Length: 396
Image (cartoon, rainbow, N blue to C red):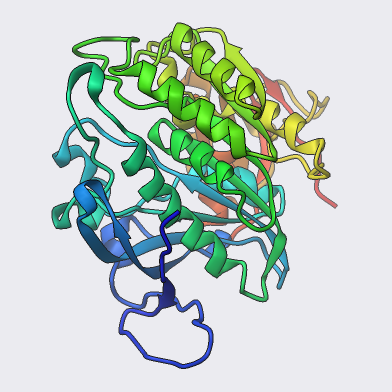
């Protein structure tokens, strides 16, 4: 296995003889460029200096941006690292400038984790500086191994450096990834990093293209070999979540890959979920209400029993849904917002504050998004109505 010399640094490099320290970037990514930083999640950006060898042994060096979210308090917190996927075009890989995964991050922060989301080399702001994760060969000879291991070593660089921080518990690491990030996560687990408890693979794979060969990944047999090899050296349990209508990696292939991994010696809890929307490959991004209870149940096996998925309270007897005059802290703005909520499709959530503020959201992760709107502004939101029920109970 290649050896990678890495260290954390701030926006400007500072040489030091002692062990490197984690320092936040102060200017590489402005709040305006990135849509704002979520103060309620203590969002920060760190830069990590990484040097790796990619395809054809080309050297790549860059400072990769890592978005970090933390719960309140000093910790030490268990750490989750989320690995992003890979778009099929270079132009698409350049967007966004940095990965955030806010919905998933909020879920894990609610469970008490610090969350790190690296934007690997070849993506975002670094897309124009080369692609160390590119595959080799063509057709059924295409090989993804070197690029995936390069991505894995970048992720493990982030893990090893964050584990040195006083606010991180180095003995409790969880790796999560989606699509190519899921494959990278399985590769990371096969390298048995310090403190790894488990790894969660959402729709992991490579070589998919829903436009040209929907559901049938290119060179899937080579990935079968890779997953078998990863299984040989993985010592922790893993959870794999796929869907029946994944247009990148159909269920035939996810089943073959999970079987190869377990026959290689890996421990895999394979969950093939029913079809999700028009393309199940989007489950991690658009199906929080589906996957979060599954992950809650799974992580409880390892002692992480604090719920991350939000379960709304039961219907209360406070008021009828359409009785607007009963809403606490009522004002004209709140009244107008509630009428918008009543006209929205299910699922839907309406939140109020003690100062007459309000927010509502509909669709996936509605509860979290409606509450987050207030939290980002430093206000505490309270659930008033969920779907067709008033759930309000006066806060003590």
